Picture 1 (cartoon, rainbow, N blue to C red):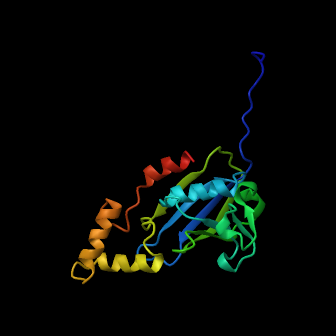
Picture 2: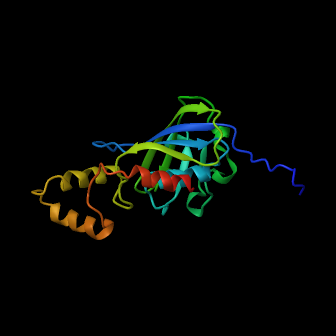
Picture 3: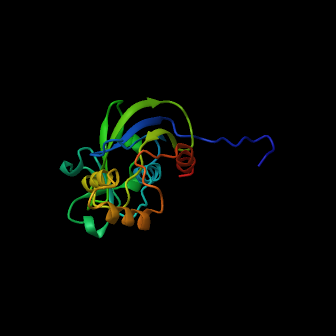
Length: 199
């Protein structure tokens, strides 16, 4: 290579800003605001959402326009999903689906516990960056395999009431499984921002 030859770095042409909120979780709600290059594929988007929320990527996932009512499932083909058509998430880019500000989509994780994430495309810009960015967020990610959003809401109710008949049982389970203080509002923004930037 000539000493005068330039190395040109090409970055994705658009940046998509999303607000993603976990359905059926309140007081506090659990949501993240993310900026993601439009050239990223849906498999990478899945990985980014996992890190941003604090999931452990132990279960199946799928993207679609309307959740279970959709025919347009984007995921990774798997024997457990052979009974409906799936488009490989590694072969679909975000810009193939997301075109319009205000557009909505759904990300579902752990089809047993049914963690539904409502995706809103807030803004499209021509900012050129090589990686995703977590802008802000709120709320602690629920624990894996706790039974889904309604069971998690019950856990929060019990843990907020030391006099509850289930308190000692639930607290013992939490301490054994999670190894952290129970605080549904806790969210370490800086630590998660750093993790997202490395996906």
